[in-house]
Image 1 (cartoon, rainbow, N blue to C red):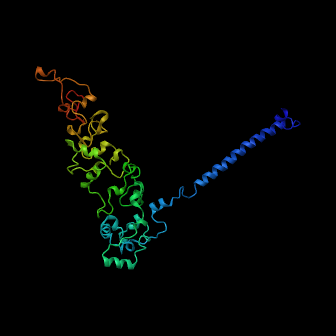
Image 2 (cartoon, rainbow, N blue to C red):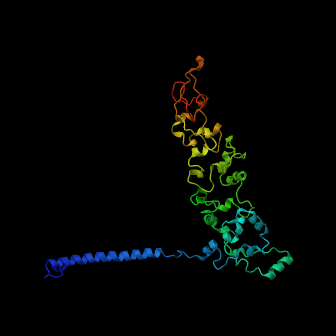
Image 3 (cartoon, rainbow, N blue to C red):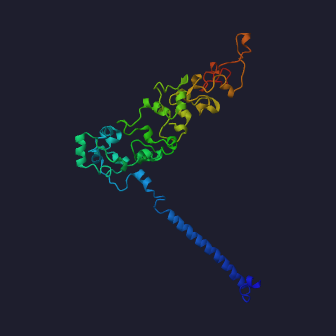
Length: 353
C-alpha cells in the first residue's frame, strides 16, 4: 500500500509531489488533445465543399453544369415555338433590359432557365430546313434547362430574388420573411412571366387572384356590410403588401390603426378624450373585411359596448313612461365614439359632442 501511495519510498515528500505533477500532466494533455480535435473539426466545417453532392438536384437548380451560355438571340433565332413568348417578353419590363442602352442589369432567357448550349445542340441547319418544309414547329431540348416547374416554391422564388432582393427596380428584400414565402407561395404563382407583356398584376384583377387562396376573406366580402373590394373601389394591396413586411398580416403600415386611417383620417386623432385602450387597434370593435352588422362591427349595439361598459337607464326623459327605459343603441347619444376634443355638458368626456 505504501508503494502505491509513494512510488519511491526513499523520496519522502518529493515522491508525493511527483505523483501530483504526473496527474496534472495527464489532465492537461487530455485537454490539449481535445482542443486539437475541436480545432480540426471547426476547420473542416469552414471548408468550401457540398454537404451532400447530389448532382441531380444541382442540375435541377442550376441547369446542366456542363452547358455554356449562348445568349437569347442564339437560343431563339431558330425556334418557332416561342415566337409569342419572345414577343411578349420583349414588350415586358424585363425584356426592356435586354437593350444595352437601357442602363439596367441585363436579363435574358438564360438568367432564369440556365445555360442553353445543350438545348440547341441538335438544332442543325438540316433539321431546320426539314421543319420548314413540313411546317413543323422547331423546339429546343428543354429537358437540359432548369426544371422550374418541379422546383420547391422557395427555390423558384430564388430565381427571381437573384435580381429583386437588392438593387432591382422592384425590391423584394422582405420576401423571405413574408407570410407568402413561408406558406410555399412562389413569385410565379401570382406573376405569370410568359402570360403576357405586363408582368405586374393589375389592381382590378388582384381580388380574383387572392380569392384563390383566401376563400374565407372572399366569403367575408359577400356579407351585407363590407369594404368595397368586390366593387373594385378598394383593392387588397391598399392595405396589404403581398411581398411581405415587418407588420402583422403583411400590412403596409406599422400598425392596424395607421393602416385604417389612410382612408379614415378623421378617426386618427390625437383627441383630448380618447376611447381608452382600444385606439391603437380598430379590430377591437370592427372586423376589416365584412360583417353582418353596420359599420363592420363585430357585434351589434348595445352588445358590443356592454362588453366593457355597464348598462344604465335613460336619465333625462320627457315622459314618465320612458324613465325606466334602457338604451338600445349607444351611438344615438355617444356619437363621437372614436374620440372628441369637447367635453360633455357635465364636463366629463362622454363622447357626446
